[in-house]
Length: 227
Image (cartoon, rainbow, N blue to C red; front, side, top):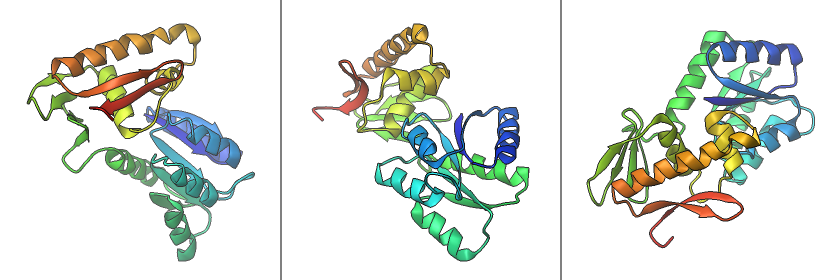
């Protein structure tokens, strides 16, 4: 799971990055609000840890801007302020949860786990778009119109999950590469095309009308029927 930490206190950021990487999170770090917003706009992150007091743009403004742009990535907001009004402001700005400094590591990790569980899944543990349904526990792809189903590989599942979560958006090959494989090496981008082909074959196998459309020179988009 890829996580973005936006925090300007260097010692705090270094400690959090170390803790999170030990917990097997892939962590990127920004110390400036404007840089943090730009990183969020890449759409490659599963979770955001966002401090309130930041240079360039504060956390409240970042959350508001992200939500206005249709970015739905779960946000855990951090602040040194414990007043109720600040918590309300944070949540109203678009944060999903709020943690006051100082905090215990166990609580931070528990809140991140809770956010990751509810970030993209429906209550029954599935994701749906058009005529397809993904079971997040069994990595099964099903078609609601044909009743056909097939097991996906982990990479195929993550490709469809990423497309469903960002439905209506065109995602670039670079975004898929960083999101799913964690690399930014141009020589490795052919992996995206290979696994995109595998995933399309699974959609064809269940006879779904939902398809992964290649947008020439830009990237890929999930479409259903004539949409």
